[in-house]
Image (cartoon, rainbow, N blue to C red; front, side, top):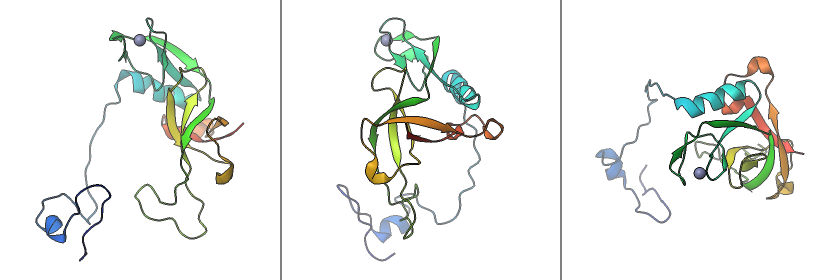
Length: 171
Ligand SMILES: [Zn+2]
């Protein structure tokens, strides 16, 4: 790596910055074992996904149905413990046609682009949505406002993960 790493809108890094440890990089694989507590709201959200359902919480004051669920309303500053199942259908709020993988490496020639999208789920309040991927759709046919539905993994393959939904497909 002899030339400066280019970044947009920021300060370019030099090889010296990397060599001197000014920034943290590694070319070795990391061995970072860790535990992460999902918390009460996300724990139930993931458990419901394993059952093939999407659950949200509702604020008793402003009546927003919040997804992913949370145990407090950041607008009303009150606890929220009213749970509501919402549908597994929704509307594309925004999307991208990505020609890079999640690690920012370019996809291979002929490989299908990734199609991440933010989907506002039916039954949740406006603007409440989840980020997922789209499938069974030609990239050029995706539109903001398009109705989509979750395609679930078979029950025996679900693990209590957002990936229990394989993708969202057009309705
Ligand atoms: Zn509220």
